[in-house]
Amino acid sequence: MSFRKVVRQSKFRHVFGQPVKNDQCYEDIRVSRVTWDSTFCAVNPKFLAVIVEASGGGAFMVLPLNKTGRIDKAYPTVCGHTGPVLDIDWCPHNDEVIASGSEDCTVMVWQIPENGLTSPLTEPVVVLEGHTKRVGIITWHPTARNVLLSAGCDNVVLIWNVGTAEELYRLDS
Image (cartoon, rainbow, N blue to C red):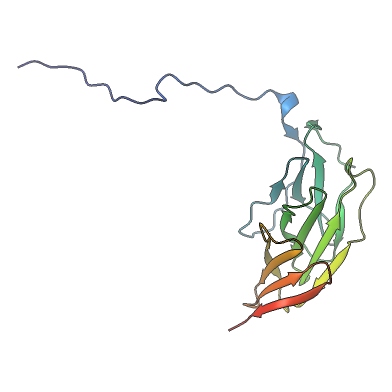
């Protein structure tokens, strides 16, 4: 009887990871503690957006991808909601446009300056109101411009035309 040591074959057997250096990471970001099933961040080719802990409403931080390292506590935020922000999503057609949904039952669309934020942004481009309870899911249509979907805890799904700020379709049954 011969005994052979059996080694499982894998194409990843000799692959080893390298830890990322501190100057390539983001540090000191106060991520929101709101209990919601969300990723709390969104990224596009230019910016990283992170929902942060904010007093007196909801806010999120927009960081240029080339700005890594320690983030100053006084870094400007996007803060226009009166309740905590639950979800954010970048527009697939414009890297400076982001939408946010909040516990204050509104969806807001923001225009981020081309070089990032230098002061707090408090005025949205569009405010979409149609939900009666908090808005938990926001997503842009991948191919149609200015079409946004929002779903709230009122069991209503709304499809919006962001260009005209009107409801295109309401699914509530």
